[in-house]
Image (tube, rainbow, N blue to C red; front, side, top):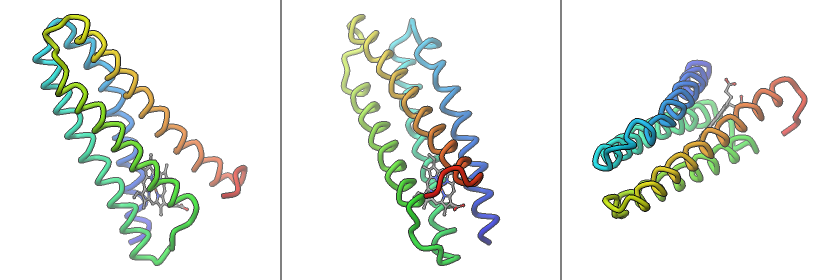
Length: 141
Ligand code: HEM
């Protein structure tokens, strides 16, 4: 059960990374259509939340079913999960409220979409690197 859950956790993290990288294209693909940008942004956030929740769920099942306890790495992961969700919701709310028919606002909304997406990728990759270093015994947390 533990191995299956951690395998699921790991596969979902890779899928999540692929999804975040694909999301980088959204501001460019929708450059000439603010309505399309808003629609894609909404769909992106919904899928983001679905994937992040599945990752957290698989992680939590592993912790609970095997009585792993809340190790430092698990606490870091929960904090990262909360941070990523917070950033995503804040980004989405900003885009939803923005008056995208104003060219300047549209441009800055696309820029902030890109900025937050790059930050999310950075956080995720940092977490993966941290877990690899830990598995190799280079990092002792
Ligand atoms: C509620 C949220 C989460 C819980 C409870 C959780 C729990 C866990 C647990 C118990 C492990 C196994 C730890 C070990 O091998 O010592 C693990 C592995 C891992 N988690 Fe999480 N996790 C959560 C969210 C996340 C998130 C959001 C990320 C990415 C940003 C993440 C990235 C990883 C990585 C990269 C591994 C190593 C996977 C591997 O060895 O293949 N986790 N997680």
